[in-house]
Image (cartoon, rainbow, N blue to C red):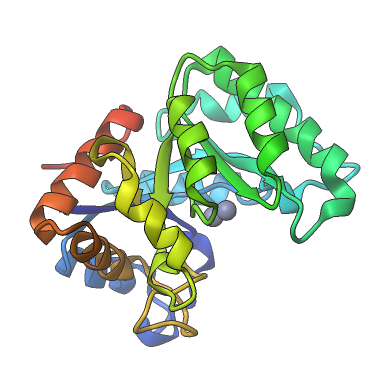
Length: 261
Ligand SMILES: [Zn+2]
Ligand SMILES: [Zn+2]
């Protein structure tokens, strides 16, 4: 069984399924995807992802404000985060983090919001889902400063081995998406070969970044299978072993998730 450890079910392009999320999830289930972690990105979509998690036994959700969704007049309040995190289907915090690639001008605001999520993580003990792009030094510095006792994940990892090793040293997991299948992603494949078997997760980040051979088309949770098959071959292990390892890692990192057997 596979887990899509990071997807945006409320944003999927469901054209291929006549607009039916249930049909898209069924297609994923038929390909061995047994659990989905649906990610919160804003105060607006928190209720939406929670409703999805309440409606489907194999969906859990997180709550957070994406660094690119942080608005000057709408930095989330700690009380709001803690209130959302009290819900039993909210098994993680995020996505949060820093993205200086798309919005370098909002760096200070992103850091403020990231610190708030770190504080909520400290108070609740729930695992942290971190988005980082072109912000390596600051991301690591804030994570070190927070020194959380629990683990977290750098999701949709696109950095090099040096960054991966620093994150692993902090007790973090590394989650790989379809980007690892892209032709120009050789340095990421180097990371993918070296991440320890007990720290690796797989995700789609759907609806974005569909893996080869679906690159350029809308991404769907079922394509986590292509990511996992690619990684198994890259790491020279059977697909079943890779699936077992990454699903076991998901269970360890997100103990509140209702992952079936
Ligand atoms: Zn992200
Ligand atoms: Zn995401």
